[in-house]
Length: 289
Image 1 (cartoon, helix red, strand yellow):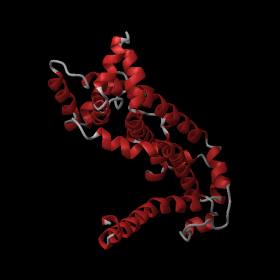
Image 2: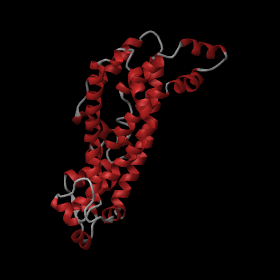
Image 3: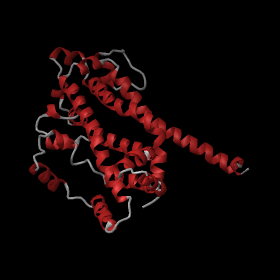
């Protein structure tokens, strides 16, 4: 009867309206971006495009996929995100599994991890350390410095701590090793948390543009996010790789819109498959220390 009360109905509809407006605020910019990328030069330069293309054309996408720098940046981002996610998940899950156990000195070690989450060395010391390790102009700089996240490790650790110890003890009695228990019991039962953290890591690697700008001297080695930052924010049109005839016939705005829209597609394709785990992973991973 409580859920049918007037106050609940008011809350339900206000909540529904608020979430609908919030969803529209996320979707509308993408629709506008897509419309600009499919429009002609005059319409794009005039700023008259809203939610549908004007003078429909696919020239922006054709020129984008003819740009070798853009294709290379996509490849670098895909390799970086895939490899980085695997390495990061391995480091985080193994650390979380170890810290989910009770042993002498665990609290001290845990606080050392938390310290890294609260305090950082800063940009200049990080740059000096990474450069001295030979990571400047090295592909590994895209992966190794950000491979570990204490926040993500705590989420996974709390998932592991919620698993009944009786399962682990039964496996040990049957002769299972720690690695077998970790691989056959903890990982499968922690799928919501792993999917949630994996999504965080993937988005972080894919959207990180600063690392490429800071550590790479050649723009041809930029990942997609760094490449887009150079041509969209810094307005460096040389990386658009347009010949004079194409530059005269097309709008730089449509090409930039096409590249930004293409750059957002991979994460948009992955998220629906992980969304069902997202809320459960955040809530269950945050209920314990």
